[in-house]
Image 1 (cartoon, helix red, strand yellow):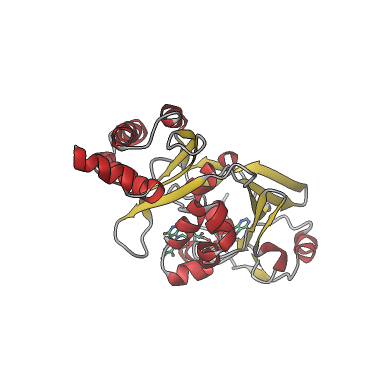
Image 2 (cartoon, protein in one colour; image 1 turned 90 degrees about the horizontal axis):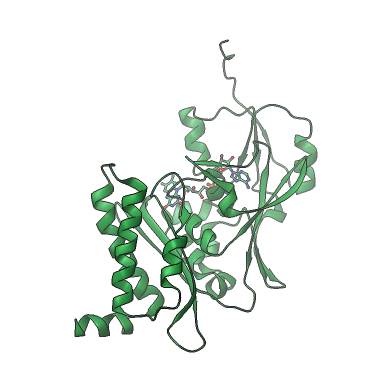
Length: 301
Ligand SMILES: Cc1cc2nc3c(=O)[nH]c(=O)nc-3n(C[C@H](O)[C@H](O)[C@H](O)COP(=O)(O)OP(=O)(O)OC[C@H]3O[C@@H](n4cnc5c(N)ncnc54)[C@H](O)[C@@H]3O)c2cc1C
């Protein structure tokens, strides 16, 4: 059966969550939530999405801002990247996410683009996603059926899709910050220095045994290497209990190249990415450990 001609959409601009939920109650057509519009407007223009109702989230005040409460960092889904990049609570507790936010697109994209939109778009190269994975973030949602809280790994199901239902709104992101402070960092390689979708991205979070430089816990996630960003749990187990330094960095680089082999062997980007990921690891080591353990090793090599 042929689909009826697309006649455009109605626009609804609620100012509170209550108004939003009441306003879409019973609506059975196609809905699109409009956050910063940096992905959605392109999809509308190209005809990839044909909603009957567009819900503008820009005036829904409950969806903005960052707060810390009882060991949890709460980030409103409509918080733009420009705010996340300089937010003291993130710089202190979730540095990899602040660094990722600071490397997204251009100043204009960072002013409009939001964390909720990045999750909902679920691009394999989405820059916030590796950081959210290593921080073990939870995604809170609201729909007529009720509220849900889902681990980010469960939300990302691959091929640019999330597990969310079409009428399900991401309200916020929660990150446990607790007492055990994690050092974290984000690195990205794009095809050029500005306004560039990642060709590879990576986030790492770790902490050490006491005052030593022996890794106690580590979490690593990569993006732009397949259908969705993912954690490297086998590599994490190898790095735990090891001391920082050049031998560890070499081992890490080799294992990352093997990960690329497993993820995208046969693709045209494979030879480039299996080498490029080593550079990403080296940048990450400088970012996380500082220059001393690496440079000392390089001088002695
Ligand atoms: C020039 C350019 C450069 C870019 N560079 C980067 C980059 O470097 N890194 C990167 O990761 N991305 C980049 N992007 C992609 C885009 O900016 C991000 O994915 C951004 O996070 C999308 O957020 P938004 O607020 O603009 O979402 P929108 O475009 O408003 O929405 C995107 C999708 O998510 C849905 N949605 C939005 N908010 C919610 C919500 N709260 N609940 C449920 N669904 C929701 C929308 O309905 C839509 O389907 C770039 C885009 C452009 C145009």
